[in-house]
Amino acid sequence: MAPSRGIKPLARSLHTTLENHKGAVNVARYSKGSASYILTGGQDRAVRLWNANLGTEIKAFTAHGYEILSISVSQDNAKFASSGGDRSVFLWDVAAGVTTRRLAGHMGKINVVEFNEDASVVASGSFDSTVRLWDLRAQTRQAIQVLEEARDAVQTIHVGPTFIITGSVDGHVRTYDLRMGELRSDFIGHPVTSVIPTQDNQTYLVSTLDSHIRLMDCSTGKMLNDFTGHVNESYRCRACFGHGEATVICGDEKGQVWAWDLVDAKIMQPNPPPKVHSKLITWIEHHPTEAGEMITASADGTVKVWRYPDNA
Image (cartoon, rainbow, N blue to C red; front, side, top):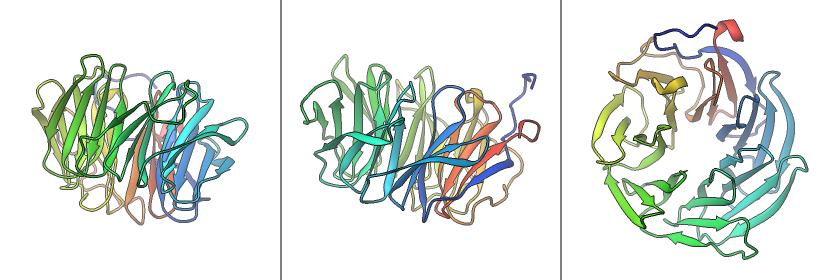
């Protein structure tokens, strides 16, 4: 497709439905780069690897004893980390299909895991209100650092090159500057469910349990834009940027997928959007390189791959 000057519409044509999970699907992550593979995790304690083009399951990774809440994929796609009710971070070898390490130390379920750029460190955020950093090159099984500033469950983490951003149920987004040893805390005022920075790290998108998604200035903590219309009051529903960071997209508790223009915060058509899942949408993620593809995961047990009609 030739690039257009205008904002691309949202990919709303259903390409395929991934439906081998039993129970809610909590997370769906694309593999890195242009490859079309998806890892999903859910209530059935399994991580499943899918071919997004064919809609087929390639492999199931089963070692968790509790539901899976988070997955992070390394840049080379050779390994991934997963976490959930087990209170341990599981590290996996994709080709072998086995766990290579389990990192224990949290006192509650682990809501989120995230690798750094070269997957030498993994960060985990827990119901116990702490973030733990694990050096995967070290022999020690202990966390190299524990961040204890949050006053309630940590729901989301972003690991940048020199900083870590966390979002907590206590209503704060905390940015840890690892080089300067400084912490900045932005009080959003409502439980934070996801934080996604822009690629230039100048702004970040934060979704909260008051049915708002806000665009915030990283350096000042000021709100630049506010996106509303969706319903998100009780559950973790992830918001993210669309292709080229020109739009904001979010699934909500009614099973609808909303999209807004990043600049003027106007809801993109159709408004209201159609219901595409029978239960709440737990996760939404845009393809890292493909303009016309995204995935949604839902408590209805399915993951759906969406494309433009002309590259379906």
